[in-house]
Image (cartoon, rainbow, N blue to C red; front, side, top):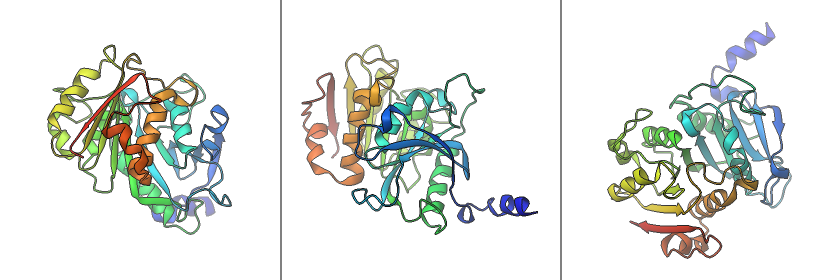
Length: 286
């Protein structure tokens, strides 16, 4: 009876509270100052939460952490290929919620497509947790600073859900809609973007680069950055330690957009790519 009651109550997200079921450590917790874990939360079973391991009792950790919702390549329900980057972002003081259950290898369970509505559901969940005194995330999420990100097909999922007014920024990794229709998104979905967006692509061998260029030309109503790694290709640098320079550049963007670190603006607005020698960066509408 008690188990049934708990299950019944937790149909209502605001009455559920997060409890870590299991976790793993990637790249020794990341390159940032807050050692990160990849965790499965009992009330969010079909996702991975990349987060600083210690959410309380760490003086240097900001009281409220910005949030990133991440949709995966292929629109699949696994963030395993991107976990080095996502963990590293978390180690810099972010809560990253990625679609799909945790994996220790790509073949340890069947893979399926993730639905678009998993993105707003993740925002609903962290909102409920931040408002729940019983949750470890109580008053720890910065609900006014939410980004959504997607790689390849995951970027189409981003565009399909981008109209959500809770979103403060967007990151399109190796993605662009161009004239395609994918994951219920098409060229008209670009109009859903209502906050600053960055496209990060991998040069001429990245199959998304040309579509991303088209998107950049067509987006004239929102601030936009186009960042092109000349040689990375469609798989970016995600398999490198800490996610490579795709991760480093994403953190620079997030620190600017979600933490108001204005010293990062020159990198994106003036193409000051010192430290990012393989990248070309341009921007408009800022």
